[in-house]
Length: 290
Image (cartoon, rainbow, N blue to C red; front, side, top):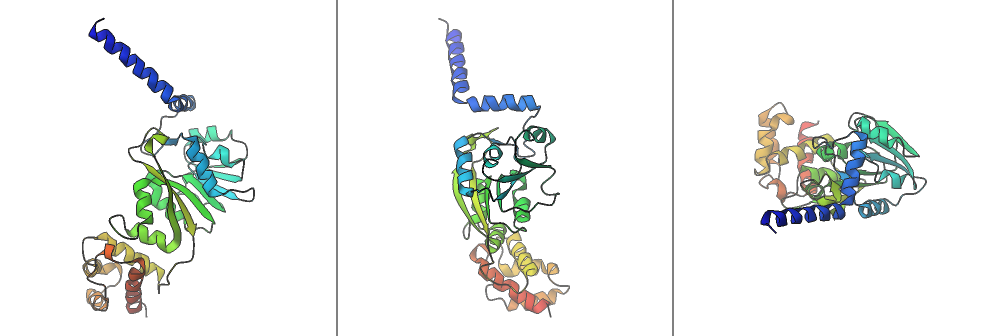
C-alpha cells in the first residue's frame, strides 16, 4: 500500500473519530443551519453544549415556582428549557432568528430587544450565559435592580477580576462589585463546553446584592474616585488624583490641598483596600461639598 493511501485512510479514521466524539457540535450545527444562523463572534455567540454544566447552573440558582427568573441572551434555550419547568422565566434576546426559535418553548415570556436598551421587568433571580462583550455594562445594569440572586456565566478572566481584592486582577471592577454585592466563583467551565469553541475558559459566578460593607459620604464621588485611581494603576494615588483634578473641582489648587490631607496618597491602587478608597473619597467629598 502506498504512503498516500495510508495517509488517506488515517485521515478518514480521524474524521470519523471526531464525528463520534463531538456529536453535540454536529447536532448544533444542523440546528443553527435550520434556523439560518451563523454564530457571530462580534456578538459573543458561543452556545453552551454541556448538559451537566447547565444542570449545575440551575441547581446553584435553587429555583422555585414562586421565582420570576430573568435570562439575558437565552440563545438556543439550553438553560431556558430546563428553567421553565421550575420557575417563571422571562428571556431578553436581541437576535430575531433566535427569537423565532425560542418562541416554541412553552411557558417562556420573550422580549426581542437589546438588553442594554430595554427596561428590565421585575425579577427575583437572574440566570444567564451573558454575552461576553457586554459583561461589564450588563452586570452594572443588573445591580441597579433589587433581586435575590444571580447565577451568571462570564469569561474566566473577567470573573477573576470581579472577585479579586488584591493582586494583578484587582481593579475598578473588583471594588465596584464588592461595594454592591457578594460575589464568588462557583466553578470554572472549559472552553470545550461551548460551540463555537471560544479562545478562553469561562466561569460560573454567584452574585448576591447586599448593603455596602462600608459607608461613604457621597457614592457618586466614591465611584469617581475608584475610576480615577485605577485609570493610572502604575502611578501613586496622589498623581492620579492630581492628573484628573478636573473630574472633581474647577480649581487645581483645591485638589492639591485635598491631596495633602490624604494619608494613603503614596500608595498605588492595588495597595488600597476598597475601604481605604472609600476614605479617600470621603476626604474629597468633605472638601468639595459644603
